[in-house]
Image (cartoon, rainbow, N blue to C red):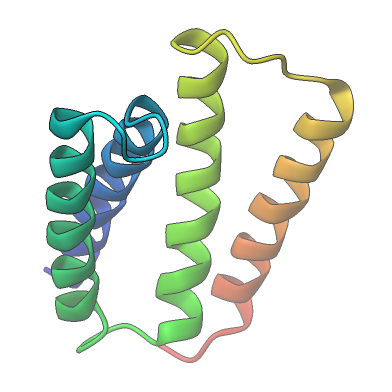
Length: 106
């Protein structure tokens, strides 16, 4: 169940980050409230996750998957550029996440 909580937490974190961009520096009410709501649920679910999964593993997966999803939202929804260097760095983060999982104690 912890892995399900982690997956849902990541989705809420990514939604919170997208609304953070839309909040325009917390100057727009609805996106600001949505950001707070999404992040609150995300952290609550992450806390549930950490009862069963090591924090180093959970946070690495959280960060790695979150970065990939936020980068895709930035590219396709916000029209942000994606360079070769950005892709390479994202792949390094993913490699680190996989590496942490391979060397962790289960």
